[in-house]
Image (cartoon, rainbow, N blue to C red; front, side):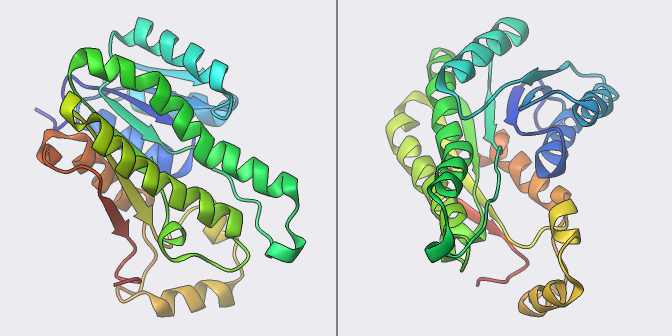
Length: 248
């Protein structure tokens, strides 16, 4: 029996990258998976096929996570289609980097809306479902940048720091209802975005990491599985840095 046997997971922004890795890991551990993305394109359909290969129920939903009403509508659909929601992973996110003096209001608003407001939207919609079930696990995908800050990423860092505070606050509010909330703060993870960085930038990052390698989406998925499972039943309000020791 898998660690998530009989559970239903909802993951935002899971058509590719870290979100996809989490969805696949959850399915391999026995969970049924609902995931959202802005559009359900060929990448999303391929993810559906890969999850379905594990023999568990899966469905993809087109949804603008930053839209409050749209979020509530899609959560209602997922509840109707799957019967319950045990796990929520707030993974949807974007970057629009720039130095503060050159950052536009649009850059700031877009990143805060997708990265932070979307998590509020989904938590607001899912918590009543979890309360009726007398339990649930909420996982916010933050970043080491949200813990330590980063030049030219004030908007991204602020959004990721907000996700940590949001998880801690929800953990305090909802603990008595059996709902746990935690955050994961990935470091340098090997994704399409980091692969596109200049080699000298990648080398500089690697030299800062004691384990001397970038992390993989699967490294993050393993921690997300722990936090989703009953193995972490007494863990709430925490932020776990998955960064190869970069920020000890």
